[in-house]
Image (cartoon, rainbow, N blue to C red; front, side):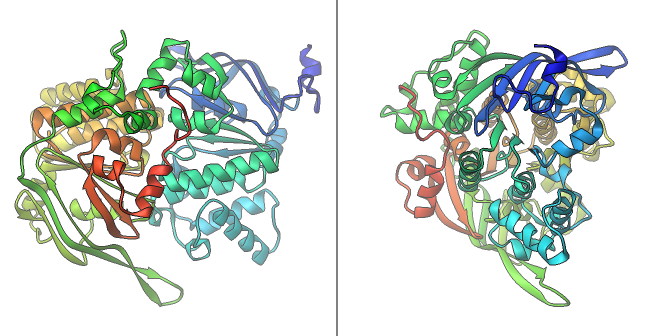
Length: 582
């Protein structure tokens, strides 16, 4: 087939909607071209769902960006073709791409906070997209369409949310806005880069059910990029496994999951939290007797992380954190000078014993992150008490006392891009807590930074780079390294592993377990991913609309949940219908 023939509009001899042929992408640096993709080839048919999985830096997001010619920085397509119904987008003119982007190919980016303008209301940004794509005309019609778009993406109270700004939304709600924007024009192909990584499992299922109905009813194809292998196998018809810029294995999802041939695919499956959770759940054996396969490369099965949790469960009954009748009421502007009260946290009480892990789980907007902010004294409670290591946090006021608290208790926030200073390189970012608390000299701080980078599986050369040069998973690892810099007694982890690929996620979970066993650390683990909870937490508290509706040991919650809400969360864990042969 000649290049001229293949680039003619409408020419599609194989009948594929999208055909990527021998795609080569590189990034130009002072030292030459650094290859990112090397000969990537695959096809997507109309109405088909294809998932690309792989670790951070494997080329998943670069593949997605190359398809619509939105490569960051100095990235460029060096070879190959990207054929959309026969038209080669790799060589298309700018005006042709403007006709394709948003209208024929929708895109849901990975990081919601850096893709929404913080100084514009959410409603304004949705309306702007609707006008740009010609979906509605006139003020009322545009607003009505904007509300419809947000409702389809899972925001039930979309009309009330239009005037709010991105920072007033939870991470999951921001992600839903981006999903709504990507689907607004009913595109032929939707490229979704980690579209549900920030969503709780019930909303994740609702969004993915909606995407599935689109592929069936509208003939919309979906290119789904994810680090959750269980999710990919459950939702996609075809699975593509990428490693170091190449496709190492591809095929029908369930077949590939049940019979992986490439060693890298086998490692991904062993490290997938959703699959590990299912294996623990469906095994009649005790945790200690489940077979754990260690690979030659030193990777490990996540079931072993759960085994470590059981073996290292601290016998201490000494309380590290005691929260009693905690309430936080926000005043939300409802038009003009009127304000309405919203109880984000409503009479919450729990205790975390020293050296243990408690998971706080629930849907987006249930109040989990607000509890974390109150605990860290980033917000003041309306009422109730918080006691950390015997000291009342809610009554601390002196700077010296606050510094002492924050040295003992460090956070890892949900959004790695929003919590890292874009003007600070990674080395200075990780060393910042050491400087603030006057720990060590310049040389010892540098050595500590390198030690932390090793612990979170990042190359030391990254110390000289900046946040915008890292992938989402790499940025989250930097945030974890920064939190561990002071060797704190308590770590508050707010969705700390949600942005990580399964291999690094497994390494971080094992690292957290090892550090807990070695240093007696106490963790408050806030997450929407119940699969991760199964392998890391000792106790679980389930939050719904600001209240704790169920609290018990992890095994009790998973084996015999008392509340229907908890059962719904457990049923929504990806991979429920996958036979793993254990």
